[in-house]
Image (cartoon, rainbow over all chains, first blue to last red):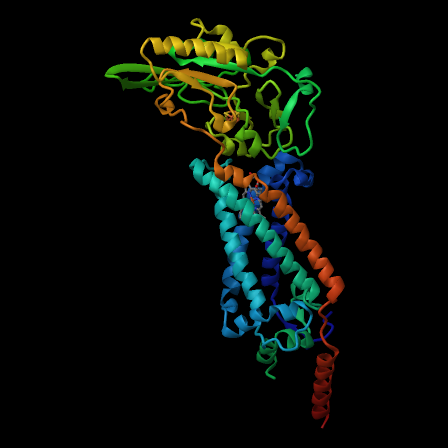
Length: 206
Length: 302
Ligand code: HEM
Ligand code: SF4
């Protein structure tokens, strides 16, 4: 049942599914990766059928995520070009975080923060995939210095990326009416007018 | 290995103290390269005692056979021909785990209890806890651990921890016909090495010396080298080995700090929500849209 036929379509089913595949594999990668990151997290291996299975599975999940993120990247890349208005938004981001969004510049489908998140995630994904392949001993045996560098990069960027995605998820929880965009693909017109007025005018013709 | 569980110095991926009830004497194996004749009795003894048999290899044109360490070859002889003081020299080095005091393998290992360092200095892999990630290979400054193709576990020389636990010398030391492999308390081995080095110096090897590299805190397998100023001569024995700075960075203090930072981001988000409240769609805008809808309905009704 559609509650309100005037709700705005923000994502189609294929875009949503794509995002969920990336999201689920990311969560599983975080849980399995952290297990090797520090002994405090080692018990997480029990979620994956024990430590050996965790070690085996993690890189394959990584491959799944890398491929599905790549698809998402090409889908959304053109919507994430940084504009001067985005830079202005970013310079005022502190007001936004303080809960005061009155004089933020008007935003299109994505605001400056979301775009920064998009490019940050893309960079992290690239680094995680390359460094992950470097340390994947089941299949590869790269030069020892490269493997050591890969281990450092994988651990450091992994931690940074987990923090980045926590912020991404929290932002969706904090801004009410957002999560449904990932469930059913729609948002209310009021939501769009408040948070993405440029996009609202574009899709509603107002 | 029941009794050895009383004297564990370090255990991989473990942040609390290990059982320290008993302190044992630090032991060492001393390999006198100048006395080795390359007969490989030690290699055979290692294979027999540990009951490991690699595939029969091929002759690659030199004496090196097996050509490299493997999951089934925990010690190999490395042969080098070199010219020193206008004389041909044939250097034969028995390669294998050095049993570092500061082991890079153990530092890198993410699996609790897969690598154990006993208070006598032996670094032992416990394969039942090994997860097969290969981090020990990444951590080792001597390129020693090898992953088995059969079971994906890491293997290396145990310094015959099972024999040492019952007061026996390692199988290789027992088998060596020339006395080139000595075994005992580390202090005694250093004293013995002094004598060998004095003898070598008398015979014209001024640079003879002991290889007990301090970059890894010293080792529990030491070499007497006739050219201690050039360890590299001996099939690439590292001059001044230490745990790679990249490995220290990877396994250093940054990790617990990053863990705290992640907890900080999670808690920060929670408290942001609790202190600032959710970012709701304002009533004002909802009303605006409702008024627009009503206006539209009225226009349509006309
Ligand atoms: C993109 C493809 C990826 C590949 C190929 C990959 C591969 C690997 C490999 C081979 C390991 C060593 C353990 C094992 O063999 O299972 C590892 C460890 C790890 N992975 Fe990944 N991974 C990927 C993505 C990710 C992502 C997205 C995260 C989470 C942000 C992550 C977090 C970690 C962490 C924290 C470790 C432990 C690092 C350490 O020991 O310091 N990985 N990864
Ligand atoms: S030589 Fe390598 S495998 Fe042996 S104790 Fe040192 S770091 Fe570990």
